[in-house]
Amino acid sequence: MKTRLAVGALACLIGVVLIGGCGPTVMAKYDAGVSLQNQESYLDAIEMYRGYIAEYPESPMVPHALLRIARCYVGLGDKPNAMAAYKKVGEQFPENDVANWAAAEMREIENKDLVPEAPPTE
Image (tube, rainbow, N blue to C red; front, side, top):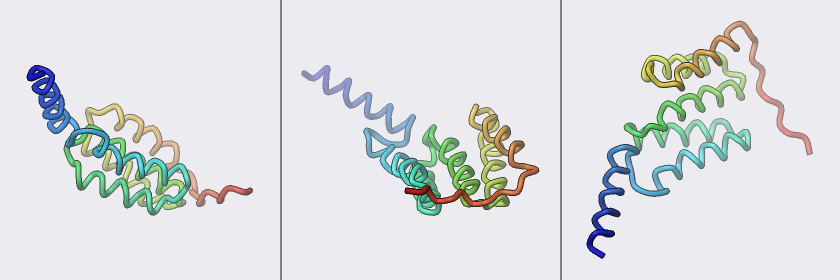
């Protein structure tokens, strides 16, 4: 019994160090942002991702949240903020694979005029 408790405590500690928290609550705000983004509630998603980044700045999901912020701005048709968000990923996380994705997406929209995505039709 003591061994299981010690292992559980160790796993939680590792979660705190590596992810910035322990258990599903760490990802709740990020997942809520994904859900809002999927519903095309881009401004709300951006705020949720920013809240996640502020709350868990050491999380390995921060570059993903920044990339998702850029994609939300693309969905809003806001090219200047999308480009700034893409650049931020590359500047803050140059060694992360997400930086490569951000650079590729940035090149893709660089010479395009963005228009906000149309709301889904019923």
